[in-house]
Length: 345
Ligand code: SF4
Ligand code: SF4
Image (cartoon, rainbow, N blue to C red):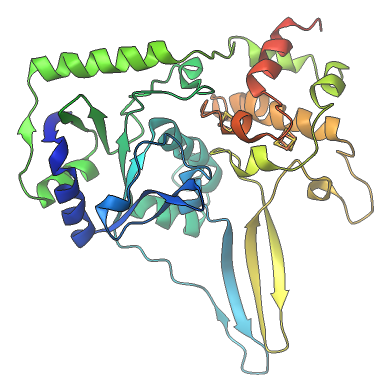
């Protein structure tokens, strides 16, 4: 892995050049929150706020996606939207959100070469080059370290920037990242051992600043015997079923397919859905296998901490903390898993 340095005051110059060669997406303020949007001017980028409210999963798995459309009538033809496949750079993504893509990949692209690959997700994923920025000052509810992750983990990125004072310490992780570095002006210098140890110290300080920890060890196995436990009524008691915890989660991926129709036009649209809504599992017969909030909160926890480990060998959570930050009734996924570990089966 190549290690480079960039003077912090040259970041704008670099991003300007990247923006002239690639579509540049980054975190900027929108309606009082941080959101990943197209960047016209590097000054728009905000790296002071750690996480966007809506995770950058929306750049790849869009909240609303027209799968096909048609004009009605005897000469009707089905039209499939073209996805732009030109390379784009997503700058400023945090390591946990990049890991979210790796958790979503098997869902949309399968695990084997010949598995079905959702073309919309796959094309957007392949065109995206991820330049991450380490989290030097984690937020109150960050707990990525509970999943053996780190606020400065380069593994799920193409390039990682770490702020080490007057410089960004840059790790070029993938070939895609290497190609970008070759494609921009040579405004970098080589990192020395001194900066490498400064980067390590910065990472250690960030790890030590994470105060929340989820006790994940053995959680998946413990859940095997808890499905019918009364604990779930208590865990779900305050939930108002708003769905915020799922919409804002970088690993949640439930969707609905809807038919839209006017007098002359029609189409099939895929939209984000939430397992926290009763309609999500409502059968045409009228039966609902998850009729109460207890069933739905339990399902959310099982999907992330029992079904994901069984199917993919990982937890379906990155420890970003968004569901804790934004839940209007303070339901806390860390407390739920810690309680799961304590409850008598
Ligand atoms: S479950 Fe909560 S903490 Fe975990 S990835 Fe989803 S939003 Fe983040
Ligand atoms: S954000 Fe909180 S209240 Fe809303 S559905 Fe999720 S757990 Fe329930």
